[in-house]
Image (tube, rainbow, N blue to C red; front, side, top):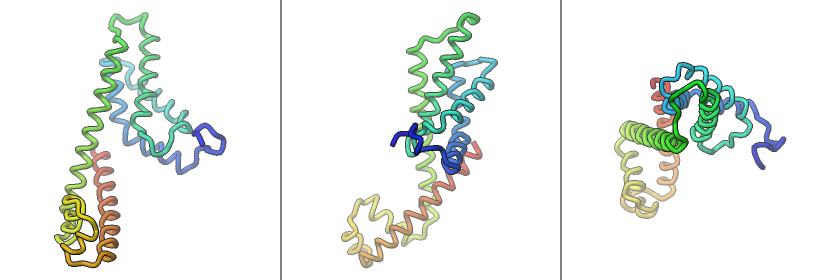
Length: 187
C-alpha cells in the first residue's frame, strides 16, 4: 500500500509523528537552507514555506523512512524554486552541482552528528546500569557471545539471560530516546 492510497489517510498519530519530526529537525532544515541560500534576507520566509509544504505533503511521508532526508528534499526543491524566482534579481547564483554537493555534505554531517549523539546517549545509559547488568550487555554484545556462552560465562540460566536482555534492551531504549529528546530540545 502506497502513501497516496485513500486507505492510508493521515491519522492523528501520524500527524503527531510529523509534528515531532518537524520540530526536532527544524534546526537542521534551517541550517540546510542557509547553506543553499547563504545570507538570503528571506531565509525565514523560505523556511516557513518549507514547513507548510512538509505539512501539506505529510500524507506522502512513509513512516519508518528517513524524515530528515525527505524534509531536505522538500527544502531543496523549494530553495531551487526560490533561486529560479530570484535569478533575475540576483548576481549570486549557485551551480546545481554545487548545491548537490552541499546537500550531500549537510546530510552526511548531520548523520555523523546523530551517530555521535546516539553513541553518547548509549554510553550515558550504559554507565547508569549496575555492574551485573552492564556485564550481561558487554558479554553478549561487545564480546559477541551467544546466549549459551553468556549463560556459561555468567553462570545464569539461558532463560534468565533472555529475560534480563529483554528488560535491559527496553530500559536502554527508553533511556537513549529520553537522552536524545533532551539533547534535541537543548540544541
